[in-house]
Image (tube, rainbow over all chains, first blue to last red):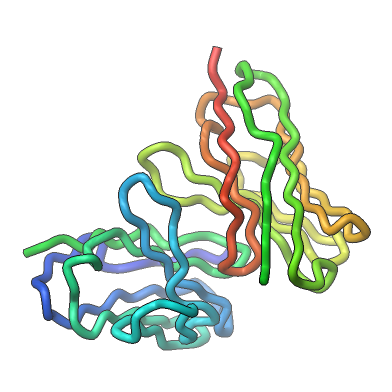
Length: 104
Length: 112
């Protein structure tokens, strides 16, 4: 089974900061990866699909890159609404452990 | 527009069974792998099972192997999850998923 290792588990940052989250697959998954944002009491919301494509309506400060086994998710300039938990997921497979983005 | 609509959730006693359904529309269902994902209260999302386009391959998370069965009916554009021998820890919202697109979810509560 393919495992997904996401880091860091917690990230403290300030409004305006650039932040990056990493996800590593135990074997190649091509670009079959999505990134989700989750806020308390809500379902996960997909932000990025096929590793690097922005979902419609998602602000352009969010971006994704990578293929194979190494993937990154970046928020270029943090906004107050971005403080949430973020997950990567291999399509049809396991999720990363999650990254809780906290206000510094 | 891709739409996935789950149904079949509810309250069931430990050891009981439940069958979830997912009605798909807005895409050619028979051309996609499909999966079930769940999220227990206060926990992160967890992949549960996936099935190949023609139903010939099925995979499960270890915790549900031998208890849950994923299936599909391409003629009806529908995905199913038969859940047997349910446990307290199966309590969660269950989502049908095609790649990164999920339905609205259906709540399964296992409790005596």
